[in-house]
Length: 246
Image (cartoon, rainbow, N blue to C red; front, side, top):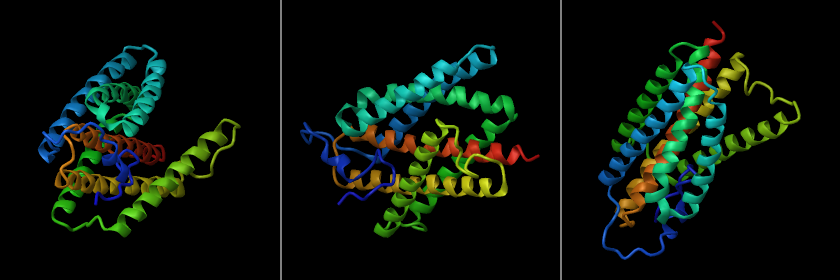
């Protein structure tokens, strides 16, 4: 049975929404990795566009917002229609890149060097957890999956409540400030985001073992990218809180 993933893009029902599979080609880990690298290249290309525009003095806010909204819409479509992944996932990566480029440039303008630090930390966490998963230091047991799934849902709920209250001028205490408690909260969220990588690795591995259709390579890469983007953004938030205390 395909395991549960804390990543909403990768869950048990994902492999059930694979209508039209004729069994001729199957998902492989190598193929998924190749798709992930393609997505990363597209994302970096999109990020370069808005990053350059920002430091050229142009207003990239509309582009960043458009990228975020467009990426969210495409992400939902991909989640419910995995067979469309080969066509929509590259576009999703481009939109996410446009969004991340604008956000990253804004953070970089305020805290010099923060984006490189966040990117390096994200990659280090990715490699460390991949090695821990491959060597079975960390095992994606059902209880582990359920715990991460619940923690991820809790974080998403807190962010949703914060967003709604923010529209009325109300802020959630400590969530966005640079106090020690605020930094501690961000650190916990970073850990939760990072642990989702373990579930993503497990989901992709189980997919290949169960002979998932070829287009699920794109879908698996998409789910992995969703987690990496979230982890990178949380790294930015955490580092910005720490730097603002200096």
